[in-house]
Length: 283
Image (tube, rainbow, N blue to C red; front, side, top):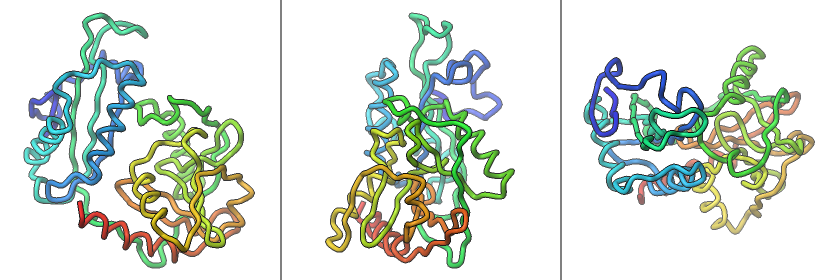
């Protein structure tokens, strides 16, 4: 069951048509949420990122799009799918409905739809001895700017990059910007650990304004034993690192074990997972 503008429907009766602007032009935004027993992880951060992104795309934000209203609609969707007391992955999508060409018609209104599916990992963990191999994706590059940091439906590079990764027996790929700096992975932000220093690319370089990225930066600044900086990461630095890991809200922290001929440990990533789960218990 899906939630279409507050109405619970079957997928076949979802009222999404080929004229939807999200389908025709990528004129849509989305948030991927992790929900456990009716608790939306980091909901406030997701909500304010969505509102900021809607303003950047010049969407007319409906007056009823409050944090409380959308949270209630998410929980209603979970209940309709018998997932209110379970672990779930939720996608909240907003679009400008139908009408117009590139220029929306004067009658277009912002719509939303919500879909939910089971997710069988309620808390974050890192599997022992798990292999996770990455390489650079160099067919296309991200041009830094406000649009590059949006979680929009325009994900052509990520789709093609994921196909490239599968064809080359990789678990993921790292993306470069037009300055040839490493900015993120296909499905999350990137952190590098080297000699007690932790780096992650700054938002200005074109990476996603990740919700999990924000959570980890808040945890890391409290650790007096490490130096944290938002700074450029060159491809050359990847092979000098002690650890590399990818972050997103669904998986939490995913250590990279191999990049080309270099292998990495995951000791610091393992320690962060414990702190992250402790933070969740306080929400």
